[in-house]
Length: 326
Ligand code: ADP
Ligand code: F6P
Image (cartoon, rainbow, N blue to C red; front, side, top):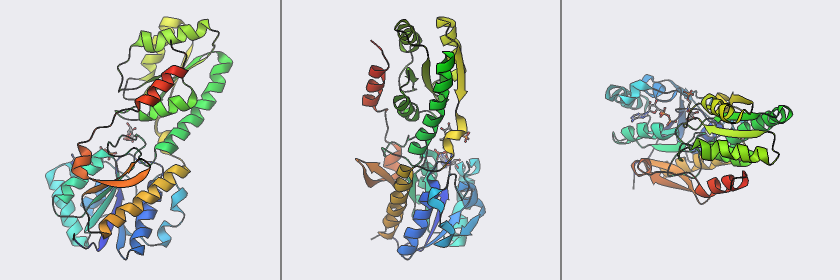
């Protein structure tokens, strides 16, 4: 039997993602339901170091499931990466009686949680990032909303690209991973999707497909570039130089992190928040909540951090097959 948890401190860390507020709401209300107190730690690990906490109750998270951003602010803290910062955070937790930090974020945030677990705190991680790059989980909160936002923008771009017979080169986020680019590319019917998981051969993957499509009567093209590959400007220049097709670049940037969370993100966040608190109530610690085969499960944080996640190769194959390649 693990330790009995009295006071949870929920926080968001790293890049924000639509659905983080829904996860906060779920953690707070699940905790209340299970007779555990819950406070909010603001600005990620900065807040943990500096004791930046706010009380949270049933009413303070009312209406939060539908709101974008994070009501607790998010931040990246270099101080927390150093031992001194971690010691200050532990001291703050002791002073404030916080025995269970629950962090919503990505791999980096989970590494931070691991350091706290090693100092005896009961910690749980919830995967929240638009990149969908957490190895132990097939899904991360924010991914679906970010895909939908990107898609909405790309549909608009396609209208004007069609009118002017141009090639649109759209750069999407994803850090070192291509999950977002691939999903968006399949959904918008892209001419080509460049992802960091596959070495790019410009002639084979980009120039030749555009030439072939043009010979077949195609007049406009949509190329999706994951930010982890290279700059979309480089890609556009190359396309224009080698095919003479007129190109325009759009870097979608942080727009992908904003907006109302989709139904999928609200529900994933709600289930994951509930699961996080249930684990603590059962006396478990040092776990990451995850999705596997559409079920909510959990992994040891260290084990989770050692796992790797590849691109969905079936999706990649389908994308290539439908984009007119031989
Ligand atoms: P994400 O959680 O989305 O991967 P980051 O990689 O920026 O985002 O990590 C968020 C924060 O987690 C960092 O600013 C830092 O405070 C903390 N963190 C990241 N890596 C470590 C580490 N190795 N040890 C301790 N804390 C870390
Ligand atoms: O991890 C989420 C993410 O949006 C990545 O896709 C991107 O590379 C990074 O964060 C951008 O971070 P920042 O908000 O610091 O510009």
